[in-house]
Image 1 (cartoon, rainbow, N blue to C red):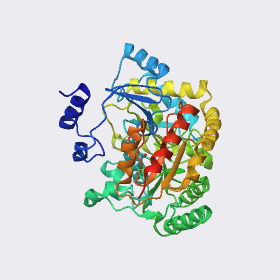
Image 2: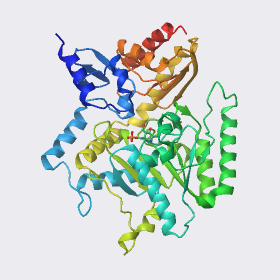
Image 3: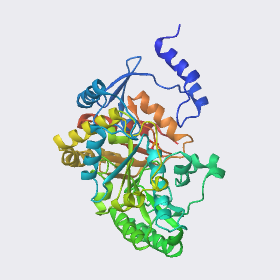
Image 4: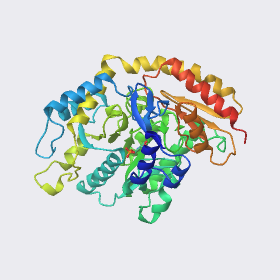
Length: 440
Ligand SMILES: Cc1ncc(COP(=O)(O)O)c(C=O)c1O
């Protein structure tokens, strides 16, 4: 007799095609049916719990079932859930746009919405190309990307991503975008200093722009942390340099802060640490605190003005049915209220330094290399030849009540900000115990 838990697993495997998953692997490790979640914890249908140490794919900020976000969404439900945004508007989308413009680096005052991160990438790419067309720079049709960069998995976004696992199968569909050296040093193969890696990346960018700037619409980067490429971190000096160089060569800078935005790197947006205003700022994930799909591209006045015309064809004729969804905007406004009312960025600054101390025993473990931290993200590389390290580690983590999903040999912690010091200590302690078992 199978229990409800096993039945949910069987039904999910039969009917749901899970993302980023080889479905056959669910024969051995079926998906975990979640019944409820609260704070930093998920609870399955057998009553087991899991610490959501990766914020459910980097989206959750203030915990699951957060009463303040719940109330905001419920309140909006009494009015309306959604109305099309072409020809109509509403308070939640207006207020959110105003508040995002006020929080973002100065000059990004026009918000265009979609639902997922990859859609925001698509919008920024299209807007950039179209801008140059409208301005008469007709040769500008290429995008430069960074080695190890990740910007989503729709065809356009994959075209500027550099993670071969996701690209290889679709290579013939993708436009060829030049790959520039990353400013992030990848140990152990890379023995340069962090400073040298940045100098090299800036020199390569300068040479590229000198040669190909006239045919390049934009450079797209993940500011400070290349997430899906392995939590590779680099200093803000690269961003400041890249901004100056792209400006000098009339090339847009697209800052993909889909993962880094909303405090993950210690400031509201990672770009702030470089004092750089990109031409496009892509946001998603934490924007609704992990509640509802929402993404946004903030663009400058200069970009907006290039589309402002009597001719409909000169407008940005891009849309998604759920653009500016009112429930999602309400959730996002509640998130911004929490940031403001609880002084989250300042509180997190102390929390990040406590996390540094709590995580420090990891550095002494013989399997741990390159322990690193950027704000609320802690990562290290496991030195092991064990085949299938990532799925093995993830399965052992689940048995230890932890939701962790290493990227290759990189183990990272990116929990919701509400995680307590005791919970963070438990995360470190149990990670150490799993590493002890890693014999290969
Ligand atoms: C930097 C970055 N850009 C884009 C995306 C794509 O976002 P989504 O999965 O919502 O399409 C991600 C997702 O991990 C991301 O980390």
